[in-house]
Image (tube, rainbow, N blue to C red; front, side):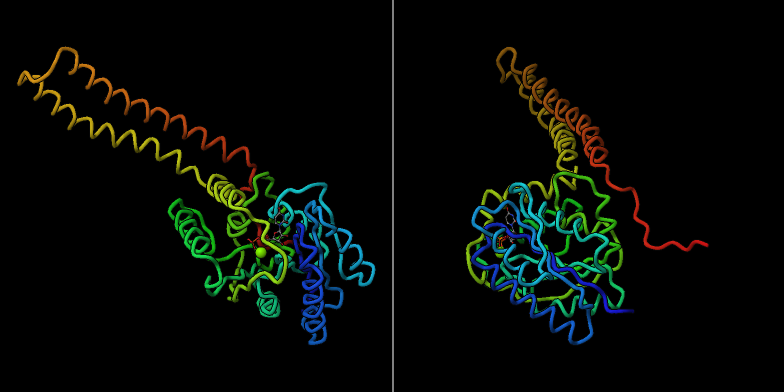
Length: 316
Ligand code: UDP
Ligand code: MG
C-alpha cells in the first residue's frame, strides 16, 4: 500500500486560545509520520470553524497562509460540534484515504494518531479512540456519562463505551456516512451502525490545554436526549407495557373493590368509579402505545437512512 493521505479534521468553536498550540502539535505529528514513511506528504489538517465569534477564523486564515497544509472551512453560524464534524468529513470526502476527527483542544491525546494510522494500514476502516480512565473528569461528568452509556445500552443502541468523537475513518466509511441524511446528528450512534471492520486504541484524556469547555450542562443534556431519541423508539414502546401492567394490576384492584362492595363497606358510586378509572386508564395508555408504534415507524422512515452498506464489489 502506498502511504495514505491522512486528513485531520478539527471542529473549532471559540478556540482561539488553544488553536495555535493544537496546530503546532498536530503539524509536528504529521511531520514525524511523513518522515517515518507512514503517511503521504500530502496529508493535511482541516479546521472547521463552527461560527466562532472570537477571531478563530482569522487565526485559521493566518495558519493557512504560512502553511497550506492547514486548510479551513467556515460554517455560516454556530451549528454545534456534531454538524461541524459532519461538515469537515464531507469536505474531505474523496480527498484523503482516511480522516481522523479530533477536538481542537487536544484533550484527546494526539500521540495515538500513529497507532490509528497503523490499524488503518492493517485494514481497519474505523478506529475508535477510547479513554483509559476518566480520573480527570469531575465526579458529576463521570457518573452522568456512565449512566448515559448504560441507558443507551438498555435501549438497544450500539455505542462504543468511553468513546467520544476521536476516531479514524477510511474514505470508504466516510462515503457510507455521507448517505445518512438525518438532521439530528449523533455520530457516535451512526458510525457503529455503518458496520465495517473496526479497531480500538486507548488513550488518556488530558485537561484542556487552554481556554474553556464550550459544552454547557444544557448543551450536554440536549445532546444526550438527541442521542437517545434519534436511535431508539423503545421509550414509546414502554408506554404500551405500562398500560399492560396497569391492566394486570386492575385485576387485583377489582378484587378489592368487589370485596368492599359485597361487605357493604362502600358508599354509592365508588365501585363503578373505581372499576372504570382503572380499566379506562390502562386501556388509554395501551392505545397511546399502539399509536406510538406507528409514530416510531414514521420516525425511522423520515430519517431516510440507508438500508444497507456495501463493503466490496467484484465486477468484470
Ligand atoms: N465545538 C464546536 N461547536 C460547538 C461546541 C464545541 O465545534 O458549538 C467543538 C470545540 O471547538 C471542540 C470540541 O467541539 O473542538 C469539543 O468542545 P469542548 O472542548 O468545549 O467540549 P468538552 O471537551 O468539554 O466536551
Ligand atoms: Mg474539550
